Image (cartoon, rainbow, N blue to C red):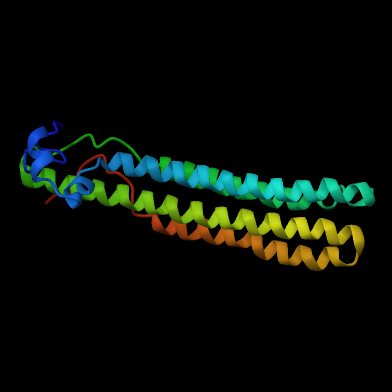
Amino acid sequence: MSQQIWGNPQRWDAAEWQSEATWADRFMYIDPYFWSYFGVALALATSIIGASWGIFVTGVSLLGSTVKAPRIRSKNLISVIFCEAVAIYGVIMAIIMIGKIGPIEDIPTEQNGINVCYTYALYCGYSLFWTGVSVGLSNLICGIAVGVTGSGCAISDAQTPETFVKILVVEIFGSALGLFGVIVGIIQCSGATFPKVCPSA
C-alpha cells in the first residue's frame, strides 16, 4: 500500500511533512509494525539485562563465599537458576508477541476502509509495544531483586547455614514478580493479533 494512503491520509509530501505535521501526527503515522517489533525487542532485551544483572550480582557473592565455605556451592546455584528464569520469561513473551504479528493481506481500496484498517493495525502495534514495556520492566526489576537477594543468601549461608531456607523463601517471592509481569503481558496482548483481512468500517 502506497505511502499516499496508508499512514498518510492528508497525502502530504516531504515538504508538507516538515511544515504541516505536528508531533502528534508524526507519532500517529509511525508504522504499526515498528511499534510491534520494538515491543518484542524491549520484552526480550530488558528481560535478558535483568537476568544477567542478577546472575552477575549473585555469582560474585557466591564465588567469594565459597572460599570460606565450599559446601554452599551446589545449593546456592538455585539463585542463579531463578535469575535465568527471568530471561526465559522474556523469551516466552517474545515468542507469543511475534506470533501475533503478520501481514495484512486484504486491504480495502476506499479511503474510509483504509483508515479503519490502519487504526486497527495501530491498536495492535501499540498493544504489543506496551506489552513489551510492561514485561521488560517487570523482568528487569525482578532480575535485580532476585540477584540482590541471592547474593545475600550466599553470604549469610556461608556464615549461618540455618538462614538459607528463610532467605530462599524471600527469593521465591522476588522471582514471582517477573511471573506477574508475564501474566499481565499475556492479557495485554490477547486482542492484538494483526488480521489477515481488515475489519469492515
